[in-house]
Image (cartoon, rainbow, N blue to C red; front, side, top):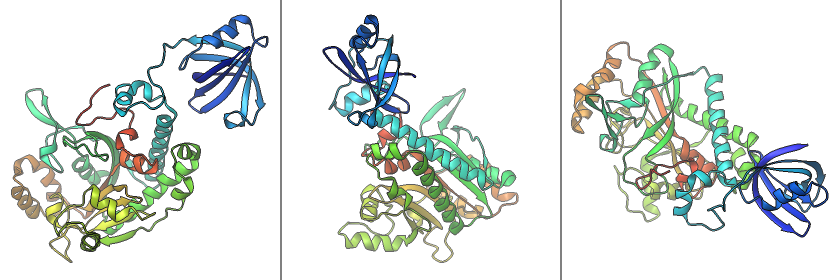
Length: 413
């Protein structure tokens, strides 16, 4: 048999070289014995440093002492690409690993995270396809903000000012009038000077909008979608999850429906835990952690007060001080991973709210047009992909949920 890959570890002892080889599927031990390969091949094995690329011919043999219980006994060893002394060794600082991100992405941990992320996205895409949603491609350059306009990245767009998208929501709303049920996966940008373990300046967001869907139906879609994503990753990536310290069984146990907790009840719960919170406060990382750290299932927090959420949400007729919305919080202290709501269809209310927050109504004329020509009840949500990955992979910081994190302090490499 022949294998190709990169040297993960190596050591030699007299007439034998032990090489642990890695490729995209994992690692395996290779033994290169003098006399079993040519002298040139043996010297190549001796000189092959960490991250050298090699091609090896050999015989697979069982060996309980080897990683995975098998090794390859080499009959040929070709050094394809030599490696200079590798700058990453054990117990490096976080800053060095971020500076060397282009090399650190080769690590087994980062490889596992990327595979888990791919499986989660594959599970989402398959669920949307099976349930009649159309994948669409909204723009990244935009002129309006669905949420906080103070956190927009401004760019020069020919002879005018434009912004990098925070969310595809408004464009997805426009597309429900033709396709009815749509979704997209796009990069999103937030110019927040936040240094918490939960925030990135650039992240990937999976978003959905559907016609004829109320807020309760919206939460059911979220439950089903998340369950499908978790089922896919448990099925396809059990070894990667275990490498990252996540028991796949803990994810397999997560089944819909998820508990719904009123925002007011969440406030009482937090106050009972000694937190200084009051009606109208949005839930931050500390509050979400307190609500979820002892839970092993996701939970919806529903019906937030208007002052804590964006203008486009549907007023709750049962309590006009609140919106018909929800945040889905991951268990184990990881907090919000999905935010959604039923959308407001009353243009008068939307314009009033825009004026209250100091936004010019003219900039939103096209968005208001959606309510003028055949509006229907509709709902949607956004999934923070890196936040889902952070929870599923039990990561300490969201920066490790993406190959090249962009934060307030980092744009290199």
